[in-house]
Length: 231
Image (cartoon, helix red, strand yellow):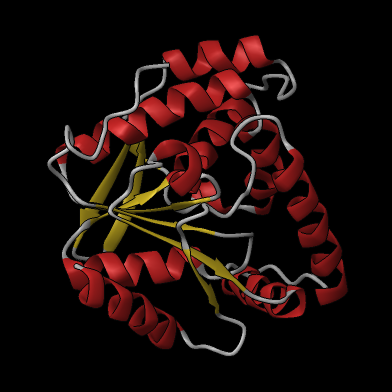
């Protein structure tokens, strides 16, 4: 993997937002990036895009060699537009397709592969070298940008996270029982925390925000307070 750029070498500002599934990272990161006029770097979307392509090509998702070869011949772009963020996979907009239930349930198999993560992390660091970014994921403050300008870790209790994820699926026209989601999210948490590459972990210097009883605006306001106080 390419060497990590140091804060001194990087002239841009990087804000990392990590946390478990359903904690609200994506929504908060998007809003924060818009307010600060930073680029929103959605690491999950990058893994989803590669997963979508792997599924379309009917690859074995447990075969790391196949996935690495796929990543090396894949081009993923993240674009900011007036309508919001778009994910381009080899030039095609797949923003909606990568949010399907099939892709969601399969992404873990792809994102957990160490050599796949090496490739993705190098892409993410390259973006952070060129522009100010708000990046969210599970290891952005510990692995991708350990020297980030600001680090945050957003959490929420399991029931609330399941409720939020259920709303997301409902908006896509898919109804899933909340108890089923609680089980799935709990299982995902355990896998994320115990995987070999880029495990879900709070950076020692990250500011922790419990968003269980906070709205998106309130969570963003908490983050801005920290940035304005220390920036």
